[in-house]
Image (cartoon, rainbow, N blue to C red; front, top):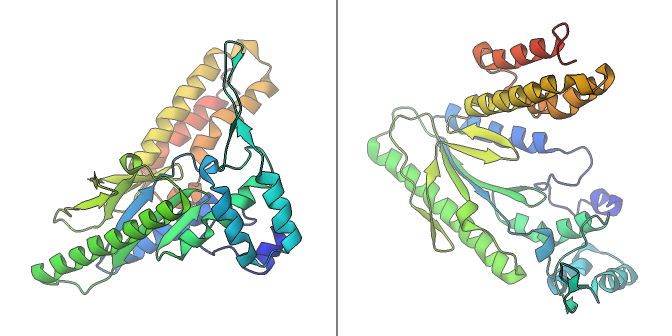
Amino acid sequence: MRYLEEHQLISDRQYGFRQRRSAGDLLEYLTHRWSEAIEGKGEALVVSLDVAKAFDRVWHKALLSKLPSFGLPEKLCTWIASFLEGRSIKVVVDGACSDPKPINAGVPQGCVLSPTLFLLHINDMLQISNIHCYADDSTGDASYTARANVSRATAYENRTKLVSGLETLLGEVSDWGRQNLVDFNPKKTQVCAITAKKDPFVVDLRFEGTPLVAAASIGILGVDISSDVQFRGHLEDKAKLASKKLGVLSRAKQYFQSDHRLQLYKAQVRPHMEYCSHLWAGAPQYQLLPFDRIQRRATRKKNTV
């Protein structure tokens, strides 16, 4: 991986399994792009793609054909080929075992090499414009900025171009998937129109024959982002979940020592209130108050921690 990073061989739009990069970094970049579109009197159209069984669908033949393009030594390419060949799967049910079946796709789960092989396999998909990834979590977008007070006809034309741009992106993604035997799940694909305009943004999109319906928000890497790039729904959901888990911990406090309760609180409750907090730390105070109440409940005398 050091060789790949030093020679900048992994796409800059890949944030997964890389040093000094995180899901929060990608979310910060994307939300900044979309906020800029709104501030520039424009809009954005965003799609979140679902890759079916990502690690299990790494086609060995395609992966091995790509390795030389990264400048990897021939012996290393041969070693990786040997590492992947001869693998099989079998099913065990109630002690009965099926015959082994050879497989020509997939990288071993839990192996330290597998994430790097996956990044190499998916790297050429990021040549598609406006695709960004955190490992297999892929997000595509199209946006525009405009003058204030444009005519209704111009506004319609801008939106038509957005839809056309995203159609092109989805078509290229679908083509890449067919060439590399990677399946995308259209039914789990999300679309959201990022806009501050009052006129409804009607989105007519299809992905591999499946109609895509634009929602009022979109979930990306565990964060729910509304169509105006706010986090109201996300904060409400996380506050409810953290409160529920704190309630369970409070009812079970008699079974744990105080230091163990504190560890459980930090592991099970606080992550819901801290994950990607740099994105929503500037939210209105009333949206953040539920987190303060949860923290006070947890630290109250004779309570959980």
